[in-house]
Length: 222
Image (cartoon, rainbow, N blue to C red):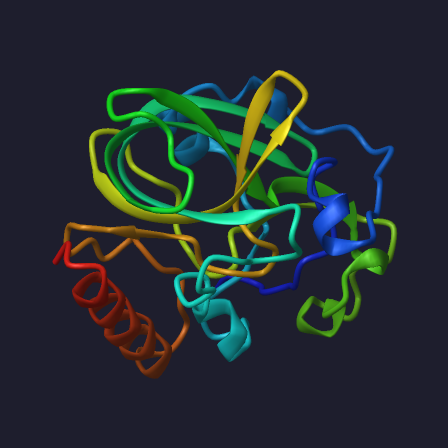
């Protein structure tokens, strides 16, 4: 049975959004070697955040009405195809996606591939830094390192699948930033994919699936 934790490490770019960052000096245990989807599947994951653990606010990424943080960020909603290209580090993941259709906000050009910065992702932290470390074995030493998968209850995008994405965007220097909102499920697979959400109970699964259908209908892409 998987063990569950909450968000503790934010990507560097997202520190502006979350207002706090917890840095870890521990090794990334091969996380930086992840380049493709199969690399993720082969990685030993000790703890996974599930849809059961996230609050209701995690299901509101598509309800931001154009603003997801402050006036310097805006909401970007678009349809994309996931590509088999990842960049992972301790607390940072980047998923390459190709824009297929612009829905609202400032979006990539149709046909353009961009890096979507993913809050959380894969990281390594000692048990003692977990917010919900009571879910772990009480006999486990506090300094023991675990590999954590934290996508706020969502699964990784699968190469070749089409997704509806809602993300934060703003210009940063000579590039435009596209990144998921902290603590929210920000992509929905058009396919009926049983791996789209991580869950421990059927009730959580049903809740996530019902929300997904509602969002896809709202944006006219079901």
